[in-house]
Amino acid sequence: MSKIYGTTFQVAYVVPDLGAAIEHWTTKMGVGPFFEFPIPLPFEELAVREEKVPNDHPVFAGVGVSYSGDTMIELIQPGTAASTYREFLESGQSGIHHFGTFVEDYDAVMADARARGVPVLLEGTLPLSRFAYLDTAKPGLSPIVEIIQPYDAMFETFEMIRGEVRNWDGKTKRKAL
Image 1: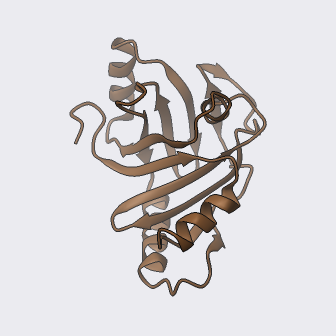
Image 2: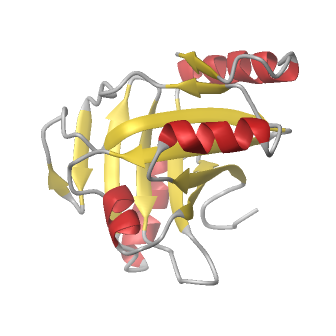
């Protein structure tokens, strides 16, 4: 557990092809099924590097989540717009991009991060949560941290996914949320 950002519950990968990544995780890793969010996500607010952008800013081409035990595996295919995900792929990287954590006091954690001089790469509000990606990355040492203030609907959605994962027969690899 990070004394600053909380306990990691999610490991997120940025991938060039969501379908190929899901195929790998389901057939080679035995993790699935992956639940895909409808794109575009219904952002209520969105900022890239502290600059507000339109709520339909295409940061995602696809997002799928599943669980391996209690750890959420998130696979993200970047959209066409500038974002931390697109930058990651364009720099020649793919793979682990960030760890996701739940925070109780989002505003306090954000104030602390800003006081520490941690850049905010992406910040927004969705019907399920408020979130921010904090640039804590150091190659070879640590990835970006995503802090998430979840709403009840997020916990309900994630619990539904956990139940499906526990009962997965390995046949259906992709499901829509």
